[in-house]
Image (cartoon, rainbow, N blue to C red; front, side, top):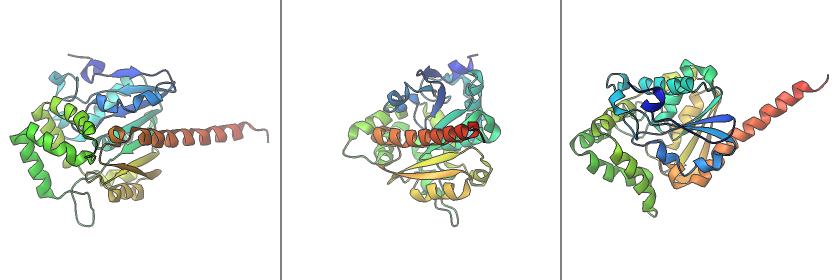
Length: 281
């Protein structure tokens, strides 16, 4: 039986004291963060990992029952934090990891300083007055395509979600991680992702958060970001100029700037509050 660090192929890099945990989205692994990590190495300690079934994780630890919902992945996030004895974690979750991070923060809010959602969504399927971006029949077709021809599905899907036809290398990076994933585990992760509905949990979140929304992202549109903002305490939304569902790959400089702006502005404010408390009355 592997350790938690081995199970999730955890890597700790950077020389700073503040902690950033980078959680990849569906079909990806920790390597998809490589375009933004260098910008944080000096001032932060970065925690990189692969969900079980992704990247270089220990797939012998995969449990179809545990990972049938996002709660199983949230438990692994907490396992990693506790194994490394981390506190005041700045959690950056791409896509489905936004809600995975939220679930973890709902269980143990004291471990988190703030959450940064990149293209997150509490529900991907349209319902009544809610616009998630996908219809139920589209999602079922997605599942069928993955089951019948996973690699063919991946090659078709990558340019659709990347939305950067002028830069095919971005898609190559993403396809690399999609192709590395076990097809059966990928399908199970897809079902846990696209069948989820955590709209009712948003109101419970007490940890401050920001939603970074890219343009032309049909997986998580601006309306989804606005929904999160309206229903989540202490949440703000930042619209990016980047397009597609993977701005940390297609627009790393803008993504870095948006992340730092949220983290550092908040830190300066906290510093001013602390300083004001030290002033003599």
